[in-house]
Length: 116
Image 1 (cartoon, rainbow, N blue to C red):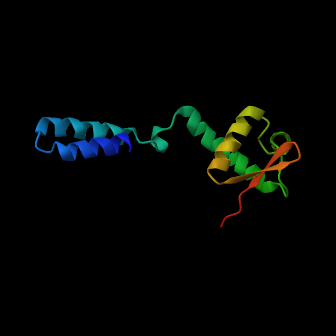
Image 2 (cartoon, one colour):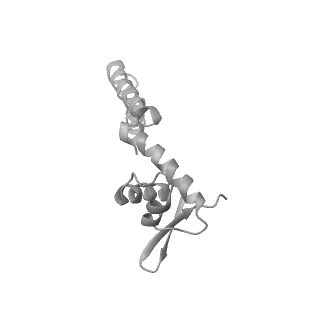
Image 3 (cartoon, helix red, strand yellow):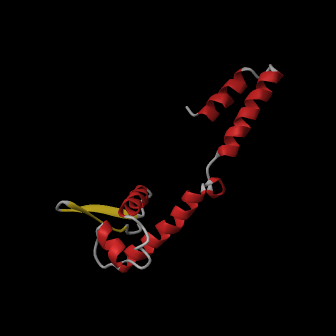
């Protein structure tokens, strides 16, 4: 159960106590205001969204899966990014279902996920 769900459940149980309900509703409002979205992203997270788009655009140019090093070396505008940064963002893209990771022997290769 999330913190928000817990506050809602408690507010229902103590509905006859106006002060407690007011407090719980305020806590729920604070949680709702914290919800992440593009407006709540940090500067780095916003920059990473642009880098992810660059990664996806470059992966689409390759005919076969590529390693991180190949992507950085042969991708357009990729030379500015470190291997570690690209690897971390590729993992996020994989978790989002936008990229597929496969093993080619000892190395990991990446490609664009095929739409269903």
